[in-house]
Amino acid sequence: MISTTWKATLAVAVVGLAALFLGAPLGTHAQKENSSGAMPPASIPTFSTENLGREAFFYVGGEYTGTAGKEVMHGAMYVEVMVPKQIRQKYPIVFFHGNGQSGTVWRQTPDGRPGWAYYLISQGYVVYMVDYPARGRSPYVPDVDGKLGLRTALDLEQIWTAPVPSGGEFPRKKLYTQWPSDSPKKGQMGDPVFDNFIKGQMQFVSGQAELAVPAGVALLDQIGSPVILITHSQGGGIGFNVADQRPKLVAGMVAIEPGGPQIGVVDTVKVAYTGKIGNAWGITNMPMHYEPPVNNPEDLKTFLEEKSERPDEVPCYMQKDRGHLSPHF
Image (tube, rainbow, N blue to C red):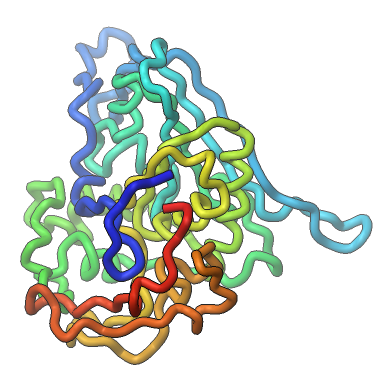
């Protein structure tokens, strides 16, 4: 399926989170003079659909749960599909978003530019975008899907959008310079771009992968032909599990900042391992196929490198003697 180079358990193509906010330099048209009162003002971004031929939405996965007479649908996942006027690429793109996000992140940037979906449509790709079960436009089932979480504005500022002025604590925080805003409050509350960004932040459940992986598998089964997975953050582990379960339906995968940590949990302030278990199955917390077979995470024998490649990184966990490899990656 995928040809990659191993380090720790798997190395994947990784690009920076900032790329999510760069958007695609395509189809952004300033609204012409508003000769009709019905035309949206410039403050409401709209994009050309000149390359878009068809679009729709549908749901995949899910099952009935509940006592007789009180059944509800649980685990269904919302999917959008966009089809270009001219399909010029062999493989469709399937997007898996990050935690606290929804499929809208692929359509539009927080500062109102067209997202990657429009660019890929212009390149002739069919595009699928999802909202994970219990997230966004996919139903959340109370008392079944678990407790909901939601990141605060300070969480977002310190981790991603403005770690230096907001008091974020990690060695590379000064490198976070790509937030697309010229506001004096760049990346913080009061910055119009940040305020728009946080309005799209979603609630999330702790057991998201257990819901999203079977729904993702159902999506690939319904598409029925190989796809390219583009995943971000939390979507990385979900994508790894989906690809592992349907290797013949995945032609390739790009994991953008795939969620971690692998094997061990890291204190990013101290740049040191905490001793807690991270993704126990190597690159995910859900079982993966390995050769020779692995029946439980303890079968993955690892060791810690003597030193890291740079001072603001921890060393990597490596498999002893490359003992177990994934037959699907």
